[in-house]
Image (cartoon, rainbow, N blue to C red; front, side):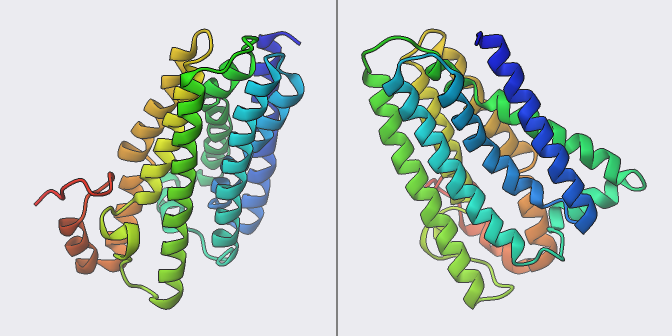
Length: 260
């Protein structure tokens, strides 16, 4: 199967998955389920690349295994979090629903499709690596693996700390563990994970194109759907307590000095 066909198939599969997810979201009036399947789409892409890409088997199995493990972990974490309040839509999507009224459902459909397309665009490092026929692994691949292990572990710890805090401290601001040093340590380690994929891809021809993924993720986290939307919702729900937290912590990078 040629490379273009593989990419087109990934786009079609992710689009079909997101169309079905939109149908479910429409039925239950909760667009927040898109987060679950945005994460699960990456393991789907990893499995399809394992089956279709013709690159070196060791490299292909390594990168695809990394993608599958990380995607399943994050998707399952979000599945449990969203399922706990399936009848109550996340505040970020409630706000979008208000802004997009009276055509919110139609706009959410295209929003879901864009999420599916973004899955494929962000998969550039995986695709490049999985198509590489070169047999020997090099420093970029080994460095990428180490960065990936640190990132996935850090994100899992941050998610676990937030989950435990919320269970015991309803409505309060989490400021313990990694959250003491950064308001969004989960986002930081998520971004670092994408950096690790791009570093891994440097061992393959055209691997420099993999930098597109962490740059897109960084822009989304800092300017669009990540930190801005999350902090707006936190300010609406927690008010002055969250403002004080903002003054005492770094917005993104743990241990980076807070802006006073």
